[in-house]
Structure formats: structure tokens, C-alpha cells
Figure 1 (cartoon, rainbow, N blue to C red):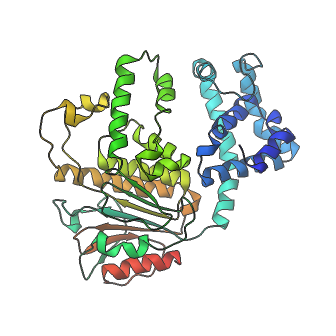
Figure 2: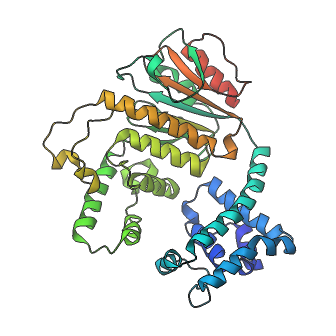
Figure 3: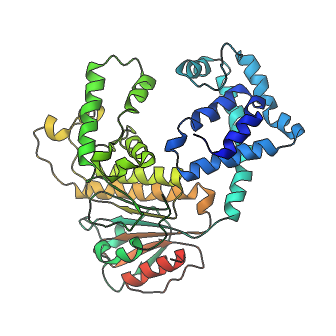
Length: 392
């Protein structure tokens, strides 16, 4: 069931005024309303409200080019039924000789809508915090960490210990749903009340079930293409009995999507942490994200990734920790997480990024000028400053 605001706009006939390919795209996104985060729902409510409020002359100008290209493509009631978005329609777009032009026009529409929506978000901005934790076993010192990032290196009077120093932050803050996230490779940190916690290790049973089900689908079922496979994978949701996340339909679907993204999240703990963090930032827009990385294992033959098989069962080679490979990976993953924050108006000029490493007496800080830092401070003082920044 949609929100009353969106339902009122639909009943008012807003989507009858919008060109068919654009309106069906929006309807397709809203079809999964029950598994959208509040931030995603809010975006669609603001976008549709903005479109509805555009004066008629500007409305015609905004969608005029799209109506023209739709006519060239042959979009009509037979080729494009209203309020549906099927695989046949996807094929219709992809195979149409005017597809590139259509995509360009769609991008042009969003380039006019999104700046207005982002300006509204910035006006309601508030302090945000990102904490990225590296494991203790890395084969380098702090001087070789975070080399792809530009920030201030802060000497610490003591070694950073996530188990000792992070609880003051994790156990604080509002219990607003999806506002505070802990994403980790292991299970050493304890989330505070109301905090979303995704742990690669804690999801072991679900990950094993997914590897078995995906392998069965690929090997035994007659799948006709990637879109049909995607539809089949959407049915493999986390069950309520497989952990607390399964009781929340939004988080259950989020977890499924993260693990079946096809980029190694099922098999590599740090890839899971990085991708889950990116998707949380993109979709939920949380106030606090704590990403706690671990040491990954050495990779076994790549075929196991391709078939989503459990490498422990398919390969007799003993599992070995790969500290050097982990270090190399993390230098890229730190950058990806920071870059994801930089994409969205919610985090512009109001986000503090702390990059810490277990056992290290130095941290990297990327922060607005008014974030309180001293030349040298204890790890507890650094976390306290971050908590004060959030006004918690």
C-alpha cells in the first residue's frame, strides 16, 4: 500500500499526464513500496509532488522531448500498457533504434528535477558520521594505510581498540529505524538498541542456503536469461528464523539483494561489508555508518565464484588467511565508501569520516572545518568528539 500522499496524486491523475515510459518507470519502483526505506519513499513523494506542482507550460517543456522520442520509438497503448513494466517492455526499449536518445532524454529530465530535490534536502541537513575500522592483523603500519584518501592524520595517545572504544558511540543515539548502521565482517561489536546490524559471520546459515539454492537454479533449472534469473533470485529472501533481520521485510530484502549482487558478497567478507555499506548509504541515507572490516581468506579457484558454490565443499585446499591481499583490497574499499557518501546531498559539508585501525595509534579524519580536533588525543577522546558532532 502506497503512502496517502502518493495515492492522492495517483487518484488526481498525475501519472496520466506524464509520458508512458516515465510513469511506468516510477510505478515499477513503487511496486516494491513495502521494502523501500523511508529515505527512498520520501524521494518518490518529493519528486511526484514537485512534478505535480510544475506550471503547465513548464510541465510541457519538461516532458516534451520525451513525448517526441516515444513517438519515434512507436510507444502506444499496444506496445506500452499503462502502469506495467514487463520484461517485454524492457526488451522493447533495449532493441529500439532510438534507445540511446530515449536514455539521454530521461537523464535530462532527472537533471532538472534532482537539483531542486537536493536543495530541499540540504536545507534540512544535519550532522552525519562515517566510521571505517581496519583489522589488527594488517601487515603494515598506519603510515601505509588510507593512502588514496586526503585527510588529516591524527596521532593517538593510545592504540585504537574497536571493542573498547566504539561502544560509547554504538550505544548512543536515537532509536529511529534505519538511522544507525553497524556493518561488519565478524561479530565482535555489539549494536545499540534500534541499530541495524549486518554481520557477514552471523549470516553464515543464510549464505550457505543461498549458495546451494543458486547453484541448483543455475545447474538444474531452465533459466532463459539474466532477467529471468533475477526474478528467481528475488524469491530467496532471508527467513524470520534465520536471524533478527528476517523479521523486518525491508532489511530482509536488503540483505538478500546485497548477498546476491553478483560481486562476491556471498563469499568474501570484506566485499560484503563494503557493498552493504554502499547500498545502505545509497538507499537508507543513515546518520551513522560503522563499517568494521576483517581479514579475508585467500581466494580459491575462481570457478567457485561463478557458480556461487561453497568453496569449503568444492575445493579441498585448506583455507588460509590473506593479510596482504586484505590490505590491498581495503585501500580501494576505503575510497569506495568515502566516494559513495560524496554523491548525496544529505552528506554534503556536514559529514565526519573517521578511518581507524585496531591496534594503531593514528587515525585519518576527513571532516568539516568546525569539527573539533586536537593535535594529539586519546582514542576515547576522538570517539567522544565524533559523538559530540552528532549531538548525541
